[in-house]
Image (cartoon, rainbow, N blue to C red):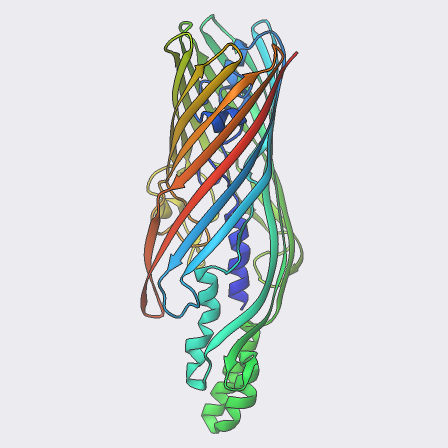
Length: 460
């Protein structure tokens, strides 16, 4: 059915954000974050993203960091509605390449920096056995036609899609006083979505075998009726022909935007370091470039908003002993102010109706210097979602998560260091209740996430 295909397309659009971060923003932007997810006061090269004002604390010269993460995620959705062929739906995501590159040049009380990363999206979730809302759309044919002997349904679906928000960040840091540094910069975001696929051969199981529902009604049911009843069945057959017609989609969406970034670093003494960063709202507008659209979802040339919210981050690090460094911080996402283009029952919905509280992350971490060349580290990240039941559905939902990261940093020599990290995220199951065709339905959502990261830091 066309509604089935529209929902499948929406799954790929909505389910691409990976690992740590807010509803749509990725904050897992370095291997050092994976091994210790409290980087808001970082004075290493990944401070280009996490604490850009702190780059003035780097040693003189050029610093470069090359990072990649392998990320996998499992999603489980359960739905107790009886007409469905199955009640558990599993989705998988595998992202073998999730890169981030940073460069900074420190000279005197100035530091100039560049960051390249994937600030949103970057993954594709595949549900091999569909989703409750998708299955419901097709399964509805069975109870609607059971009086005519229909007992089941099937179809052929193919879809592939990707959604990646590339970003480039440029800025400069300036040490105003011995203890205070500031940063000013901007991020350019370039979004690219692509979708290609089809929905074909929707059939129902009838006493005459598998066939298209409209054909069955027209050729085997209507001839057994006369007068008004026959006319009603033929009209229903024509309507079902339209709703179950084969559909194709071949669409790309592109857009770009620029958002300012400011930062502050305070280092009152050799033990304590504080970092603050504010990223302004990224007002991102995408435009459809449509070759084929059997869904009606992608009119050629239409534009729509797909913002990234403003973000305030804070971090503090304290060197408790010459070998032990402890850190804490937060990320606060201003979701209420962003335009996500969300709908409820096909109608536009305001964020205030879907979100009770802005998304917030709280991080704790520690590093211990085992030797002059080896640091071991670990940390905890609490990602607290603020959405309500009206936001949640099987296509796009936001869950609270508890993440644990471990790893280490190995200094090969004064110019080369390697970061290794492993992070596991365990999500807090959420559920909602709704009504469908007079039935009371309970639907639950859960996930688990794993990331392995490798980073190479160079100093010249």
